[in-house]
Length: 569
Image (cartoon, rainbow, N blue to C red; front, side, top):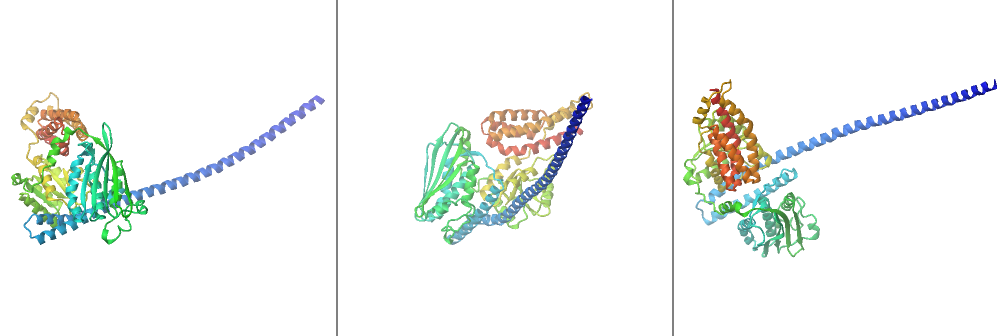
């Protein structure tokens, strides 16, 4: 009996222990659940805060984007509004300078030109700064002839330097390659800025340009540019902030040395964009040496012999008079001063067949009534702007199977995004205000060749194909056209890449293939473009083919529309 009681007691204790453990376990579970609930509530709160922060960040990001777009649009509008009257001032002054003047009148015109060019420089500095801050500045890689660039800069700036009583000298390292690769325009801009700066703070002294070879590799050279002056110098305190926007030295802020303080900041940004370095060595009262270093690629000298020779030819206002009589121009510009100026410039070039309109609607109406060799289209006009007018003209050309007329945009807004809009609308080229007589002449000559009437199709070949009907419902012409449409746009894009990258061999092969395929379908004008590109590529002169690239897609589209109509008939 005692054994049974002992067993019962043990079982009772075991049950009590298990009950106790269960109770503690339940309590622990409840505590864990409570802690989990608290953690879950905290997580939900954090998620809400995160979502709120994300919304705030997205709103801030969108606000920044909108602000950037608004700033770009504002700068674009301001640029156009300033450049349009400046175009009239500089253009009319240039035309006046070409006429017989007394010495006093000539001096007065020179003052007008100098003042207008200074204002244009200030506007360009502000625009460059805006583009750099917005990340819209793009390098334009191409051939760099340093010796020619330096010679050009010396010819341009020597009169200003002499006017300050200074001597301008050049020391260029003979070890530098004759032909390099980089952005020649930006290099020129930096050098001009530094030389003008040196000249401004120097009188009765000297400004020296030194270009030295720092490192020579198989495919590239590191070039060091220095501009040394004997001017007022810069204190150590000012040197530390010299390349900041709007920064000017204490003496530089005086009326004697007027300026915006943007030039050196822009130079630094451009050098950084080209992955180079820039700096200054100076002592107050003992002159300054501004320097920058760039890595430039080497190129084959034989590739640009003809181009180099062409660049040395001097511009003559009468150069295109022989062909001018046959050129007809449609000028669309709402600004009366600009219309008068461009008409005077065209007359100076011997072009008298000019029709002027004041908005896009009138431009489209004029195009419908008459054939033109070239259309000069202002970007911003009332009622219908230049972009919409261009789109309508391109649509008309496709509907009526017309050969595309070269359309050149004219605008004071020179930001890349606006240039892209012009090209997307169907324009062929871009001329920024203000432009000189020389720039206008070269632009007209560039597009004069492509404005000559050319048949879109060789109808004899097209008729022969159309008569070879298949046994099915589809015609042979329709089947070939479908195949052509499937393959050609991609091939044109491949050809564009090869031309831009300078791959002459690949460009020759693709251009030949496109030419042959187009000829077999009787596509006359487009095949002639491919033939020209093929010839340039064979000669290793792919850069000469670049102006033809913009004409390819419009010509392709016109050919497809024409063939489709023949196939339906």
